[in-house]
Length: 255
Image 1: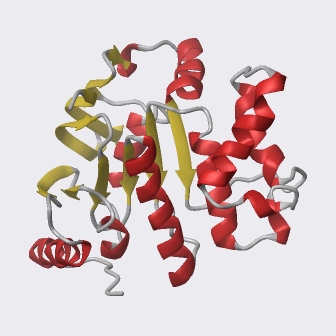
Image 2: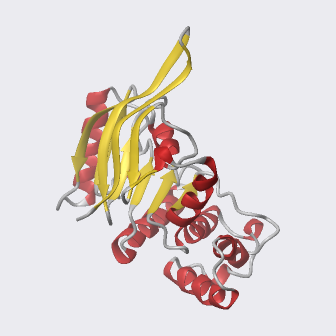
Image 3: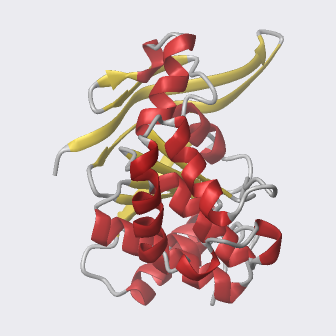
C-alpha cells in the first residue's frame, strides 16, 4: 500500500515563552491509501489539534506534513483554500448543513464550489446519495430529516468530490446509538467499497472499533497504536478498551 499522508516530528505550541502549552510533541506517523485510521485520547490529549493541523485549519509550530508528496506546512495562504477544496473532505460532529438548501442542494454545493460542470452535478449527487442510502430525502430540507440522515448527507458532501483524504471529527457525537451504528457502517462501507482514506478522531471505543488501526494520544504524544488485522470487530473493541484502561481510562462506550 502506498503512503498517502506522512507526518514528521510535528510540534504545536500555544501561548508565549512565559506561558507555553505544548499541545503536540514529536508526532510522526504515516497513513496508507485506503486505510481507515482512528485517533483516540482523553480530552486535552491533542487529537483535535492534530486533525486541525493535518487539515491546515491550524498551523504547526515545527515539523512537516506531507499529503501525496506535497508539504502542506509550506503552502502559502492563497494555496491553502484550493488545497483543502481539491484534496480534503470533512465530516464534523455538527453537521454544518445549510437549512435554506435541500439535501440535494447541500451535496451539490460542494461540487459547485469545485467548479464541476453543471451538467455533471445531478448524476454525481444521485450516485453518492444511492451509495449512502439517502435518495429518498434528497428533496427535503435539513430540518425535515433525522440527525443520522443529516450526518449521512454531510458524509455525501464530504466524499462527492472524491477527496484524497476524509477527516472526521467525532462524527457520531450528536447522534443516538442507532444512528451512530448506521453512520459508522456507512463510513466503513465508504472505506471498503470506494477505497476512501479516512482519519477519524473519536473518544468512543465503539466508534473506533470500525477503523483498521488506532493511534492513541496522551499528553500530545503517541502513546501506542494497535491494528485490527483479521480480528472481529468485537475482539478489536476489547483491545481498544484494554489500551484505554492502561492509559488511565477516558470516556468509553460499551455497546
